[in-house]
Length: 130
Image (tube, rainbow, N blue to C red; front, side, top):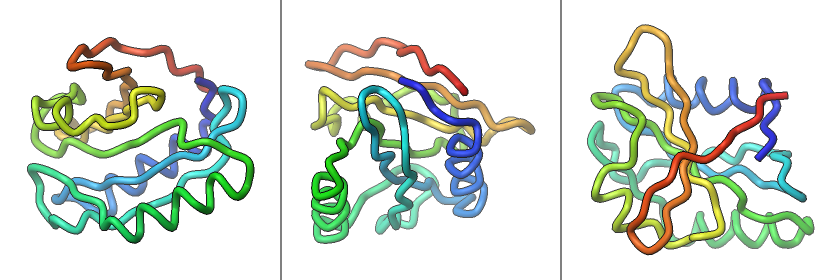
């Protein structure tokens, strides 16, 4: 997946804006390239987990599909732990074709990692910054 530094910076800014709670959102993509960050509200308002409102998620997905794009990245932050999928993240990974991007904000400099999660298996995925 190719991700412009400006889009990565938007995701990091979202993570820092929502701290100490986790943030969450989507990145619309086309042909393996990220094109738009869509901030979502963490309706759990929790530093330990995130939830997206079903109607807000539906509207975002319809907007993405209507623009001829795909939900290539689902992102959230970890405010107290490393940017690696938790068991909850793995259990709730319902989009096997999307990358799961996690921003770790527990360190002075945020750390961004991407993963594929399929059938409970986690693999770090390449993320090319352009």
